[in-house]
Image 1: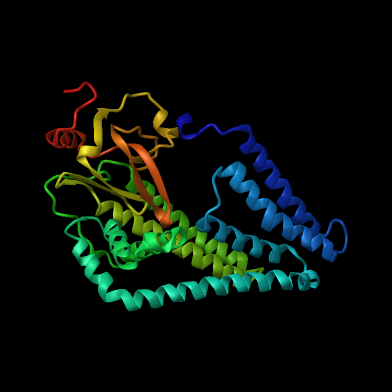
Image 2: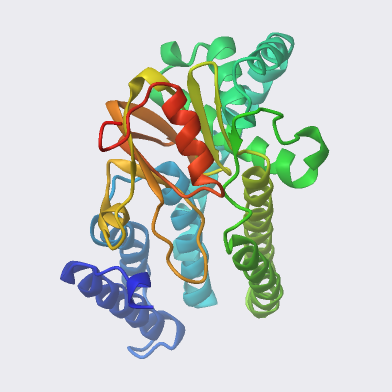
Length: 364
């Protein structure tokens, strides 16, 4: 089981202790009033700690990545709920400016989303035509949506933010479609299709996660209702969305096998990532060496494999001649040089790839 725990740098654990002390001290000062009556200066000190210092520490030392809207927005919302929970009622008038600022930001986001919806409605006939046409080129749902968005809305000409938001909405729509309307999508009928979930332990993990989330949704809702009805319902809606995403991801895994056709390799791992690779861009296919742990820390790669009760190393590795873009969930993108594979039938995939002229590691 030791392999499940990835060794973190000391700064990671120092940051965890710092966050614990930061939140604990603010709870003691605001909720329990250990220092006496809470004055306006203490309230704004808590706002600064939770809304500024905490996100900086999380992104710099825990996540070790640039801030993204998909992570930053929920963090700010949770921070606001936390502040309202710990600040005593008589001092909450000091939060008026903060509340107004958040409302303005929320209104701006809502207006932007309404604008996106209006634009989509106006362009829907064209988008639908591109989406249906892309089915001949892309057997998986997410690449079809991305292709239709790109051809309809000229994403490259609208900037990076618009492109990311388009990808974010594509993931959301796909999650809803897979989870609530599973009959819309079937497993592609391709001769060279290779599933990756049937021999894994992920179904058991999936059932455990669903069971745990159902219990957590009820428990958190009941607990928060004692303090704030608004916070309880916000948390419940977010939890239900997470549950819907989890179900949609599993349905997407079932219905998105790896497909090799027309000199292209189509890969979609649930709702988590997707890419299309020309076979001429594959440098080699190799059997992954047992005991090699590099795949865990390889930042220039993605792993097409599913979590089980024990860590399972990849079976094969695709080395690419040139780096390719892999589209991650929520509009993110990653440049990779190799793809690790764990398939139900690795031997059959090996033979299919070799028929495309791709060499193995020993050059045969």
